[in-house]
Length: 414
Image 1 (cartoon, rainbow, N blue to C red):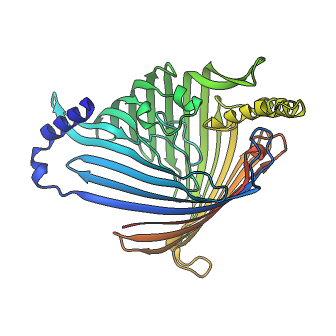
Image 2 (image 1 turned 60 degrees about the vertical axis):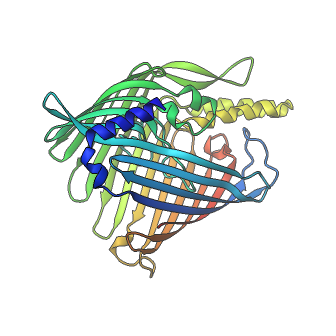
């Protein structure tokens, strides 16, 4: 409450004339998602009652902007229909509530951001190491609500660069009660510098919080010519939480030291609308192939001993931001803004292939999007998506609870 009052005072002091000039703006977005899942015979997930599952979810999102304030509310109803008769869950989430304005200090103009906001400095398509405050999901299939963190940021802009001093509290955006998520709730302070050098963009970040106990990271994005570009990002942190095998119990969350993350990617595009991105990334906080093979071997032994509930404890390893340490992704899309696709206007096909080269697991996702209409103020989009999981029998992706997920989504705005 005190925070809200303080933000209100800041808004009153910083933009007094706007109170009578700026109208309230509302944006409504909605989505209906129907999914079908084919269950998988996994070593670490409990056996489902049915081999298949159907589910319908709905979501409504409202974003409002007024006098420097932005608020986002998300209403979701999950399992509105579900074939296994699981109870429906309806939730109202305040995704964002923040104020942005400017003030002058010692002759220097500062941009101010205060409140709950989704802040994303990451570089990359399949993964972004520099999503420092909350690990936002990349390319989800169905309805996904992403909350912001508590942020107070002061930014100073120069001709080709920016300095930002920031303090955050990620507990403002808890979206899960999972142990790994709650243990990673952090409060910290840091400094970021961004600069444009020719056709390249670089940024560097130093940050200290009560979980990682210090980190340093950076990114580089460059345009090579009209069709090719490259991007990379990296991060080192002193401490992190990781699930580890134990002798007295299957798994335990323990504090580890020294972890690095690295991503490198290339992207290509042509005038016909084809876009290709190839990326490799490494996450030192994730289990490698040897660790996964040992985990799955332990789970097999527990099943043979009649102790299956203990084997299911290993499923907590899937809470990690990256399931495996080494990842390679190939992304292709054909932009619908460049003519007809398969005899239809406004049709955009997309394909993602995620492969774990160390352990042989993979995930393949395809989307077909059709923009039925878009007037600027209102739109309707139809999407058909499918995600397939597989690989070697002792790979992490082959032991996920689903082998196939197919979704039909209707979404739009008004």
